[in-house]
Image (cartoon, rainbow, N blue to C red; front, side, top):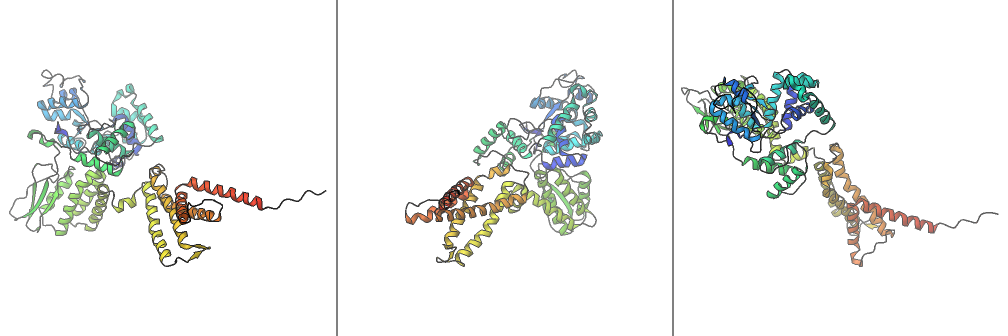
Length: 572
């Protein structure tokens, strides 16, 4: 069963952007095609790519040799589908007859691209194509983009000429199933509503892999998904939330990483995607022949690359699931036959390790950037400054994905809630030092301000600010809703909301001392604690503060009315 199980990485924003850039279209155009022409998800629950085996294609590619022997999997007429994961039983039976033709006769992944297109789309053989489809939905989306370009459909998609696109994608019978109308309706919906949430979609797919049925992989947080999410969080002893927060997504990724990968028999080993094996670059004597070896092979044993003895040190790097392009692989092989400067060796090793991590965490766009750095490094005159810049930027982005609680990703976060917390933290830095300085240096027990002890004013003002800060922290989930708010406005909200709470508390304290708010402590010694409690509540609750100020206004108006002299009787 595990023969076709690879990394099965969910669709990423980088994958959508790379596809949109390749076709010169907008993300909504990509989602339109995915909604109508593709399956909603690229993998079954067992992490094998979604497939549909076409018996008429198998018959055609084997010249009908097996039509009489196995008409259910080799037949001139289409049909005989088993549906779902049962399609793999049909595929495996066909592979026993002709493995290559069988792989070419199935459609693969979320875009359902046929295996026989592998060579035309630049994948070489069908088994290489299938291995890429096992890796990620980004790869599957890349196959869709290549197919659209190969068939000259990019312009129709860009112009929203749905009839032309449907004719090229589905054939002349597209009108029978109204594919053009379905595309137009899907595009209208996607451009008037929010696009699917990729964090939710990733969480749904990983929950599906781990046995927690989310009720579909659509990027929408419905009741089935919420139930599956809470069951997973409970199992992992995580805080129960109503969304896929960073800690939950990281736990899902870690649990999926523990699941087994392919364990194919030797004759189908080329289709397996195994855990990375190390590549060792070691010095040899000049007479030692240099083998032609591809770096990015998924091999069961360590692959040994040997270079001339002029290279003084050995460098160990990982083999990753994202294979090097053929041209770059050949360039690397040729450079390894020559003496390499130690600095170039170090950068090469770092980039090769980083490339695999970028493939897993950031998607194909980041891999293309790393490949650009490799090309610059492997040239006759390596551009080390350019390469180091690329490596540092990609390494930083990978670290942000792997360790989201690091300071830099938090500071760069687009989450309104995190921006509010950053504003609170900034206020804490400013207020903590200022309050301590005023308390210890500028004041004493006898220091008065407006006839009141300065330290008491500091204390009640601080209680109001703390109450306001606590109120904001208990409502952080509400701040995730206004996603259109600017970063600056949310930072200022976090910074100045406690300041408003502090001044409200000071005003309330003045009202209590004036007698307009007739609040009395239970005992003379408890008076300060009463002031602190009330000021905290005023900072915590805006509604309470408004009610207290309204009561003070009524008391003030009543007192003013009593003090006003009576009007003289009318003349005459």
